[in-house]
Amino acid sequence: MNINAHRYQGRFFEWLVIISCLLCVQSGSIILAQNPDLFPCGTPVTKDPWRQQYLLHQLKFRTPAGELLQIPLKIHLVGSDEGHGFYSYLKLMSALCQLNNDYLDAGIQFFIFEDIDYIYNSAWNNHETVLEGADMMFRNNDPRAINCYIASSAAGNCGYNLPYAGVILAKSCVSGHTWAHELGHNLSLQHPFLGWEGKTYSYDNPTPKTVTYDYTLFKDSLITDTTIIDTAYVELVDGSNCTSAADRICDTPPDYLSSRWQCDENSKSTVLQKDFNGEEFYSDGTLFMSYSSDECQTRFTPGEIDLMRATILHKKTFLLDVMPPVYKEVADVNQLGFPSHEEEVPFDKVSLHWEPVAGAVKYVVQVSLNKSFTRIKYQGITDTSVITFGLKTPRAYYWRVFAFGRTDYCSSASPRGQFVAIDPVSTNSPGNDVVHFHLHRGSDGRMTLRIAPFHAYRLTIDQYTVTGDCTSHPICVHPKSTEQTVKLSSIPGLNIVVAKNSQQQLIFKKIYFNQ
Ligand SMILES: [Zn+2]
Image 1 (tube, rainbow, N blue to C red):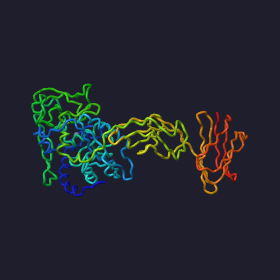
Image 2 (cartoon, helix red, strand yellow):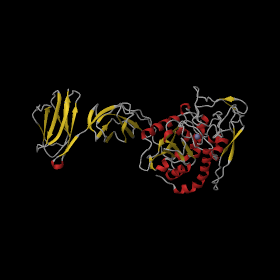
Image 3 (cartoon, rainbow, N blue to C red):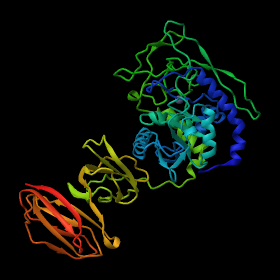
Image 4 (tube, helix red, strand yellow):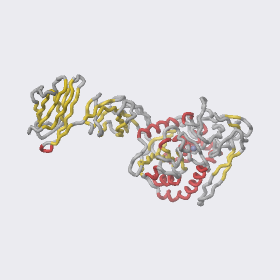
């Protein structure tokens, strides 16, 4: 947890201003939703002097093309006070994979900065106001990275970005392109429909030349209750006012739609709009910064990309101070090791091994009741190619492994394995020595009794048919520090295997069926 107390105090008053703006914007009804209960984005329109300078003097902010910019993200996962409900590591990897795909054309790739921060705080996890979200950020932010929080609630939004603080995403909105959208805000982008937030466009009404919107300008002095109304030009189809209208980026065409909308097969809006010259158009749904649905969105425009790269190289240069990891792809795990197919293992201590892959720094292991892995009974993370855990129920399970690198968060599942978790009978015996047994059926159908290492005394093993006939002479097993196996006779029908200690006390009995 990183707290920059000095900065916290210094920024606090600034935040009151920004927050009051946020609340205005929200109450102004940014309606939307792929999750119908949530606003799509709670990010306010803000006036950023650096951005104004950029838009006026873009030539001064030229950035070298082709250079990959690797940006640190400090990930904060928020759960309950008791430590429940954290966003799953595997889903986080999938979301980061999507995020980096979304930023490939921009030449920007994000990496996880240092360890993931797990925050145990039910109030922050379910925060209902941006003020609480800001408090969480101030107390936990790391000033060396873009801070991203994933919580159950993002103050009623799918996500929001607070300038100078970071991004918060609601768990139900992490997949898809919301993260790309909010980081776009963090890197100076605004909605292509800027000025229309909270308004409902109607073709039947005359389109205005300008729209006004709530904007509380941040000044050096404290303003807690002042709402400043600003004016934006409404963008024309012919592009003649694109440098001064809406987001002031000319290759994002006019868009007046500020509620979540579905696109047609050409990724255009189905809502026809017209500018104040009477020229008609449909909105471009491919843009991440629009409010089109996730299925429509595929891109940032070159103008947006230039602005984001310039923000990193000229404004938020601290993001380049962190030494990035070597950019490297990691192969999927393609070979599982132990247990081999359908092998029996004690259910209370399952140990899984697989072939490590070069460059992998984390593996996620899933154990499921079904082949489709929709009934997960165990999910674990490890940085080695082995993991040991206990299961609650003896039965057959499927397992698979995902591999992740320091910059590669995309992984397909390994081939599927299967093992049989059995109940190893254990008995306390004189001398407090505990002996573990389990029966194993080999691929040839023969049964074997496996005896874990034991130390105190000699065992005798007998095998009977169900009628009580002894099928073999008793087998004597001496203490040994390694696992021992006893091959059993192949007598069809029900069999009973019995183990006794040196005092002839029964310490194991199992009935099984032989083919
Ligand atoms: Zn937004």
